[in-house]
Image 1 (tube, one colour):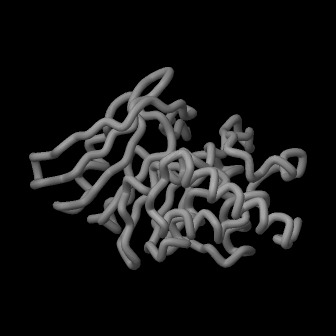
Image 2: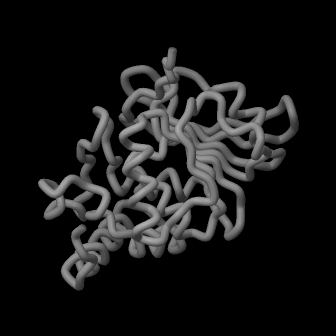
Length: 215
């Protein structure tokens, strides 16, 4: 496995400066970005480009998001230490590690077995393990661990899954990209069991959120 040396740390610092210049203001989020060795989550062919603000392909036809997208979603979540955070779409584990770096208790679901296996090994190796990690259908969430303070969805959903709203605590925040070919970044604040505030934060492009199709 590649190491995290001074060269990578220097590039990470430059990435943090870039994200700050692009409007990421939450210093806690920037600090977490600075902690996580993004190059270890990429195929070796892309390691030299790991700290550019670009998305790259990973296993199972998925992508690792732009660092700006990761930072932007994380900033919208407004995470505090020890909050219970449900992540839908572990992917390579990079976003998971950023959430762990913020001190959250992270519960994460991935529906692609290759990515689940990879991220579980990688997060353990770099000591950014979530509280709970599983292979399953993100649309269903994790009702046995609910309610959650925050929920983040890292794939494009055609609509906001009702089951996830049900698992958000009152006063909690969900950040989810909603749309078919491109997505609007939506923030939901749960005011009561059947009352929500909804805010929109611009267009993004994510891989689609898929249900499991196990026989």
